[in-house]
Length: 408
Image 1 (cartoon, rainbow, N blue to C red):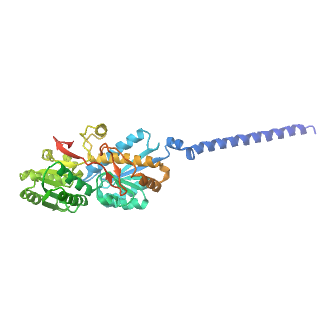
Image 2: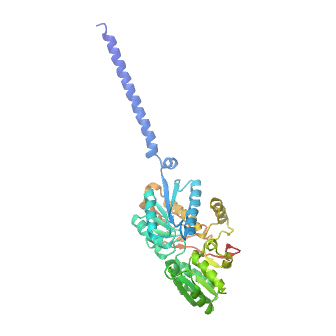
Image 3: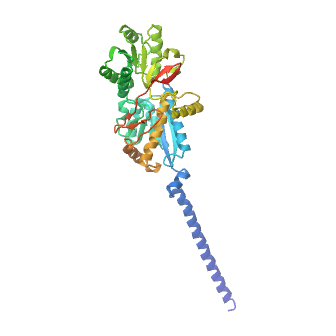
């Protein structure tokens, strides 16, 4: 009997220690749960600072092939905007991730690029760079209800779906604006046209230009078409324009063909005023092209690197520092595209976790309400119609001493 009190005391001590252990264990579980909650179920600000949520923007365009200068400009211009936005704290406090895929101006490759970006987690699409690829991809983005903003796809059908918007003018608008600009500045009354009838961009601009020219009292004295299968010899079209007494040749075409036309016109002693649209941007970069032949060429473009406003000069300085070249209009379109997305996201108060479809719905609802002042607009800024078309003042540039200079 003498051992009973010691046994009771030992039993009490064991129970006390067990209870204490359970209490400590419970406290540890609560502590771990609290830590875990800050990673997964914490506040919006904590989620932002932890870097868990980001807006993923994908881009598509040709960075190899004949139109690489367009796609590279778009890729690089958007990157500058993304870097600026992230350095300033992101969009609604969330950082942006950006990934660009090459489509070589091929519809099938553009769709492949879209699928690759979708697998990456893309939530918004900036692209495609060219019209036909943008139209093809919009069938996919529309089915996914993903917001799509093409920086430079100008065909009307680029915005045929309700999720798609444009930064550049549509082809008809470029044609109308070109005719009006020529008439307002009294540049010519007898005009010849050379255009690619197999290309939606070129033929679309020419059709609207021809119609508006009649309204502006401009006479079309010659009309020379070519196709993708026959775009190296333009002697017939140029001779027709010369024989008709054309004071001006309007060329809504890409710069590669334009360079050939200028060289062939020079060889035959034909020196009218040449005018083009945004596809002409890049002519000064054509390999083995005598750039002096482009002197005085006017093109309807929303951007010139020689513009003296603060935003343009800052952008040009950054672009030259990062890529060791002067930015083109396509890069400016893309730079603005990223800031347009930012403006719409902020207006709709969206966050990455809302998901692709909700983000798209939110942005579509506010696109007609935002106004963005960018590289490709004047002080009045840019607005959008419900149909996805941009509204902004037209600009023109002229090539002087081997540089694009904004026309007065």
